[in-house]
Structures are given as C-alpha cells and as structure tokens.
Length: 159
Image (cartoon, rainbow, N blue to C red; front, side, top):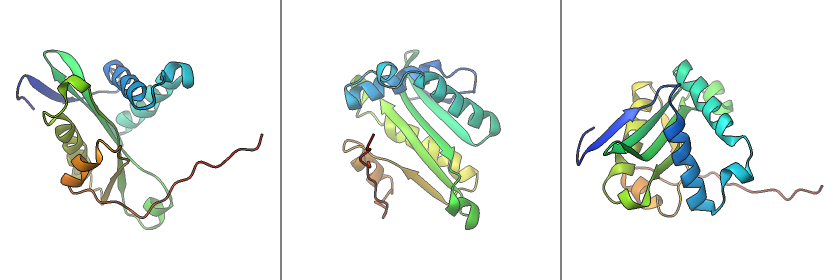
C-alpha cells in the first residue's frame, strides 16, 4: 500500500526487530511498564512465537512504514483450540495492532487490520477475533467486528 508515503508490508520470519520494538512501545503506552523489566525474555518469546508460525504459514505480521520509519504493526495467526479442531471452524486472531501516537487518525490501523483480515480470508478462515482497547473499539466496530459472548477473569492466586 502506498499513500502519503505509506508502505504496508508483510514481514518474513527473519526480520521481526521493528515489529518487536513497536510491540514494546505499545506495551509501554498501554500499561506504563517496560515489558523488558516486567516480562524478562519476552522479546525472544514474541519473536519465536511469530517466526515459527510465519514459517509454517499459520501467521502473518504487517508493518506500516512512513518515510522509512516503522510506525504501525498488526499480527494475525491461526488459533488452535477445541472449537477449531472438533467443529472444524478455522479461527484467526488479530493481535498487536498499534500505530505510534503521532501517526494516528490517518487510517493506518484500519489498513493494518484489513491486511490481517485479508490474510485470514485468503486461508479460508471462518471467524476473525481480536481483543480491543477502549481506543480501538470504535475502529473495529466500524470494520464489522461485534462483541462476543466470551468472559474473562484474572483468578486470585494463593501462594
């Protein structure tokens, strides 16, 4: 994609550094914490998770660049769970959609998310899921995502 000096491209399994840096920046912005301090080794785990799946054809990672600088990220991968294996309904999960603050409101998140959706559709995926921040919820709703009936909890640990 090219518009306003924008390039949108899929990353290969061997060049994920810009994506990892953007994901770290996203975490810092969302949680106010340095993921390198909070989750030691997360960069390698993130890289291994996506590199292995990209190599197997079950994931993709898209980066948006403007003026040669990485300014946006989105990742998608095929889920494997009881529903996908028992009911044979392939599901993709979009994650890590992020645009640096100074480049927001220019359509980058929409373009990145659409690239992930297109990747999933090209692979016969029936359902595309994602987890939305409050900021991202209107964008995703405008693209056709709807709330699901899933619930989540963070169980209290007794150690």
